[in-house]
Image (cartoon, rainbow, N blue to C red; front, side):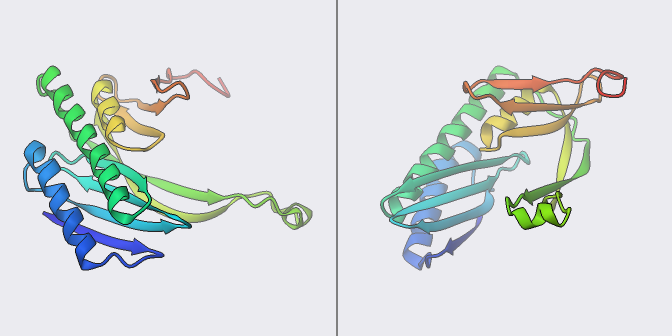
Length: 194
């Protein structure tokens, strides 16, 4: 198990690092074994703490969860409880789908985070373009829709872009405001400019 534990606006001391590493080993070890890697970030925000977890499991999927609490340990407990719920749900779905696997074909896509300033001086200068503040590469895997939904369910992401294993086209699954999962499967030749 290789877990990196860092702090933002707070020092994640050795006691906290040992506590969360032991909790993850106990909580997730019974479901996925000891081959776990990931990153845990403890953050202090005003009067409460937030723990963000990103754990990569041997199947290649990434579990994400966060928790908040009055102290660092309470936030870690909340995050680990959510991780355990997600991995338990994932294992149950895998059993019900009898080992449905993605095809493993993956292409790379750029992922940008942008910031839009509401400053009036940008508009006066004719600059109406948002500023890119982060850029990274993400894999676009070829997956059946059911596996894409399972993968989205393991994360706290709002959406997942994937290549549909059924027909090879790009698809999106996303979290709707009502809590359900939506699926976008664009038809070839349909859209703007057609």
